[in-house]
Picture 1 (cartoon, rainbow, N blue to C red):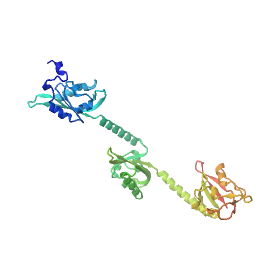
Picture 2: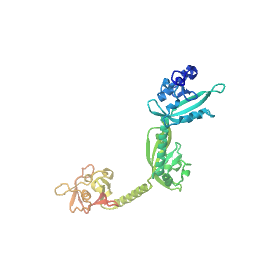
Picture 3: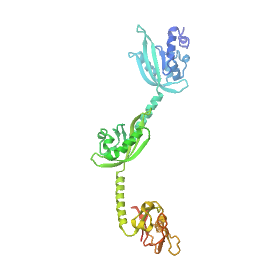
Picture 4: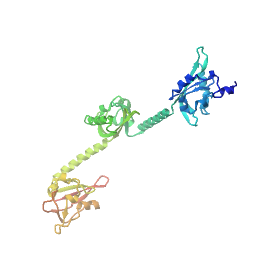
Length: 392
């Protein structure tokens, strides 16, 4: 028998084939390719798993060099030499060519087979498709690298927080906000740095997040800095889960809103002082927003219009301060509307009468002398944000 005859599929002598019983046994395994090779690397058996993986039927592979499954640029001979050497085995991941021309990344294992006398029988080959798993790992590495880059360069505080509240990873913005080094923070928990009055609300949200009742949450909270001072932060939290849906850690963003909160507090304090001042003067005072909806009445204005502050809030100025001509009873232009439209102080040099009084509107009209009645209210930039009406 010539060498060509021996290399042709189906023409091997009995010793050039794997035993039929072994071939049947290996065909049971379909999630992994298993083959037997002779010492020259030619296929003696080719199980159903190898057929599924590479698309080559067993009848086409028997007698062919396994190296034929490698792309032209690969060097499979080195792998075979390593398995046939002293180590007696070789491992690696290689791209293999399918029968349809596509390629798959496979984890390949080769083990040297010997008989009882130590003579070489051939090589055992295992093939496992790792294309998808390596793609997922690469995507995960890329995602982790992107997250690390975002955390590193973000001016907003970002942190990975354990399910127990421990800081796992923090960026520079978090360290700057709280006054700790990264090493110090990763030895602490968010609970230990949260103001006591804000902790219960935060933990309630955490419980809902872990239970799956919410996907994320946002809240304003106070943190205690390393120097003992308090700082306000806007906290946004989401939960990272694994492929099986098991919670892994929290992803947190912390925006520094301390200046905003202190400005709000100062504004509320200033507004309270202003309302005390307006409430103590003898004229009626009404303020509105830029759209002419009532935002404040002092006690004198309440008494003169018949509207309580809680009733008047948010109503159009014409509803609360409804003025008419005392001679004709025809409606007059509201001074607040004039002041807002012309963006200047508006003087109404005539007598006017309130056409309707109070929410019930069951009291008779009352004469009201309007003097230097309305003016726009401007912010620091000069934009009109409302109007004030003074009358007696």
